[in-house]
Image: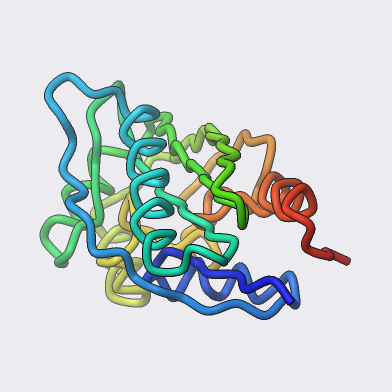
Length: 191
């Protein structure tokens, strides 16, 4: 039986992967997630997803390993996980009435070390947000550990005007449509 490892400490990605009803283990890769000088958001996302998968593959060489990373950008400027209430408020104020891009990359290493990669680009159009709405949202969700400072699987949707994506699951952090394709190519049975 093939062992499947999620190279992530994210409870959100683990929750998404559980939707596929396949057995897996999670292992946090602990890598430096800093961007390089002049690195584009999509390139950063793909580099980090690949680095996570490769690091965990060295620990589990006989497993299929999934690496994923998400980068949030406004007009090319990268916004990370806010980490605290003040930063979250600033991010959401910046996003108000703007279109944000989310680059969600995936790297799957099969048991032979062959890599399949993909980056989904999701555009999120935020509606105009008042300070009261931002404060109320932050108080209810406390989304400090989420790229962009919101939880799309919860009240975060109330902040949007629209979402454009090839894979709606990508905005949550793991592009499941492409992941299913890659896992099938790796020999895993996906319903």
